[in-house]
Image (cartoon, rainbow, N blue to C red; front, side, top):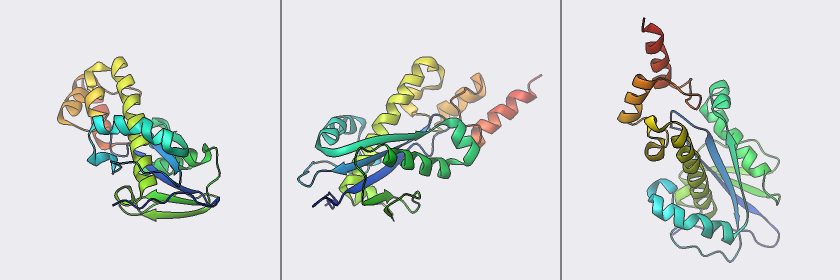
Length: 202
């Protein structure tokens, strides 16, 4: 059973989570969600444990049930410049900053949290324990998946609509065959290897 961690008596609790730390391509996306005190959404869970159909069903329900919500992201260029952890924290900070209400407490999934102008707690497996973090994980995942589906229209040979940029065998083969796009993370080892291999071809 998820803890509600909703907002009461003007004390606003925000759940934050990100999607897209592991892929070889695309941005890392974070969401911040403040749930209403009377929120009783069924089916909330870590987005990775839900099917795409379940996430797509819950996404608009969460947005309607939330007091407010926001999305933040860090670009591929930012990921390559500062590393994926720092880029993830930047995306989280941007999501919280974009909220229309200022939170008193921010609960973040994992063991790292961004520096914010309010109390922050990092909770390991928070997306399986705290409703607002679970809601944030779903919004972040759905938003990022749509970005990758859009990239698929531009780069269909990489299969982004199904692999979402993750290093599947087919994605690795496509990198070796077609090279690296502007949406690939050049600081990630498989992408660096593809660049190195391309440079060695006479």
